[in-house]
Length: 270
Image (cartoon, rainbow, N blue to C red; front, side):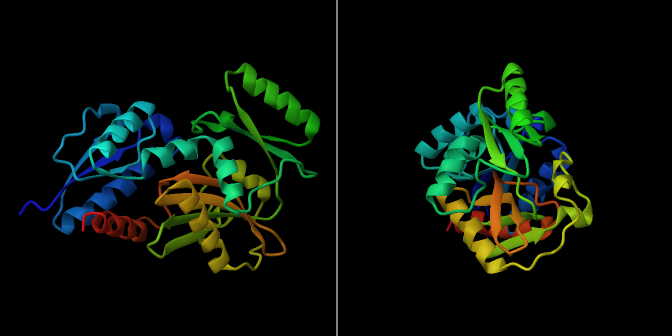
């Protein structure tokens, strides 16, 4: 029996730096869960995506290409449910706008001044390589690095204070109760190796419930359902969100995440 037609859209390689296989794997796992539940699921990479046929009831998308988002906008206007929404994906790729949204929502994010160095991050689009995120030890290096990035064609750079503490990766599915955290300093899974700057984690005590609530607040404010990000846990146990993303690879908790994501997709079809 044909229950529903679900379209899964994979992410173009340029938007999966050092994570091509991991990103493909989480989408495949979600599709497996949905197919096992009896749903009709089709997958396509966003590089091959054309018009989204009327038969599609829901799109679960990892796509970030502007053309992909335009097609999903059109599908949304026809009544197709899109997770994550095109608007939330666009926002997550615009760090300056996202920073403003999170601050207004009461999410703890880094200040712009620092005695511990600075992070300069591309703010005019999704990071596609290590050159889009750079560290500067002091204000003079910060200013030089900003000029270098602009000369290289990065039109907007956002500056954040470096925060000492434990780097923590978090993964969640909004409203599902699914939330997991991991220390990359423990398992050695680095994306660009920038994460190593915080060193081996001290495993400072912190409130998991408070961090989960903060992450959910960020997800609601940004309109993102399937999310991930980075937080720094200070010696005092306070958490600061330093990055927030739409649909990460969930490589450390893929099977659990796939079940939670599939549950959200199925709930959207009820």
